Amino acid sequence: MTLIPKVKPPPAKAERKSWPEKVKQEVRERSGGVCEAHRIKARYGLPKSCERKAEDLDHMEPVWAHGESTTENAAYLCKDCHKVKTLIDNREAKEASRKQGYTGQAARRAKRKAAGKRPLIQSRNNLGWKPDNYVSPLSKAGRKGNRE
Ligand SMILES: [Zn+2]
Image: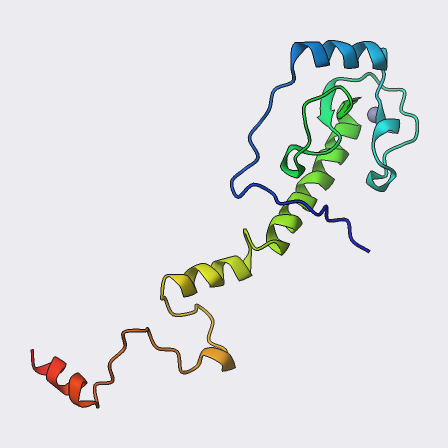
């Protein structure tokens, strides 16, 4: 079971797209000012019908997952439903970015490795780690180097 969308999140934070006035108006009219939690996918666990006053416009498919600011991708949500939806979206964004190697431990390790730095954590695999340009002080070249 996977909740992770097969999309590439942008490396930086997803840019905030503001809603076009036309979309705002269309969605307000469609919703009649009542929370549209029923439009949100079932996996978010929002109530099938929420009667509260709608206050926030939400990207059903989040921006980081390439969701557009269109009427079809918009849901007019009450504060509570929006909070839940955003919480889950943020968690999934983090997970996707980690799994795709943009952030997290694997990404930090790869970055250190690319910079030729010693891994922060010693493991069986890197006990004998040396920088690429390492010259043993016991070798001929190393002894020469020490006298300079
Ligand atoms: Zn609601």
